[in-house]
Length: 248
Image (cartoon, rainbow, N blue to C red; front, side):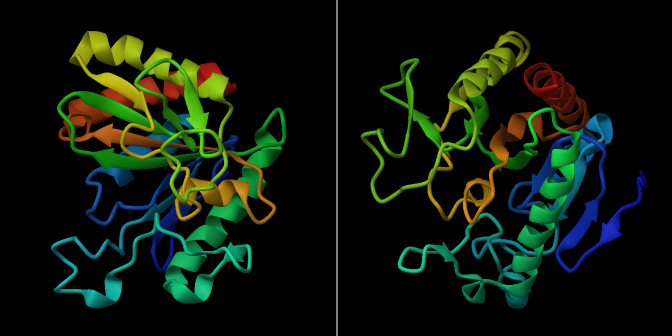
């Protein structure tokens, strides 16, 4: 299996030889250092890798200088009347990004015990108390131990996305991450606290619609854990251990 990056119109991708597909939709500057973290995870776990390091959100300070490179790669357009994604409303390179995700997930399935790829989307949050917020189409109810998807949670609003990973696995991942992060950094691990991922516009929902059935999770990583090499190496090592324990 080649370890060489393949240059793309949105950034780069790399082949893997495991069920994991690591994805960084906001590595052009919206979520700093997430491309580095995704790349290190892919190297450590023989994972497939897809990184957008060219296009950024409209709120990015570079948007005024490079208006043709404004596109939020975590914000899809779902046509509720047509029951499908409306790619004509999005940048063509964003469509290519998700086509490559689908292609790599199909290849990653071959390395899985249950014929399902494991797509891991890497994002960033600014928080002094939360180390990692886990998104899987679910959210805590009243800050308790119970979590619900968009069909049952009281805060659903207009969201109708699916649960993208088994709730039991999400809870186990939370427990495993928090055991270390609470001790080493005094940081919490939450489920859907900031980004539940239950909107059909969310990138992880791509893995559960239009005939896809991959496992998908997004990790929103605190700026504390992204700010220097030591902390990035720490979170890469922790993620790799937790993902192996729960999927391999």
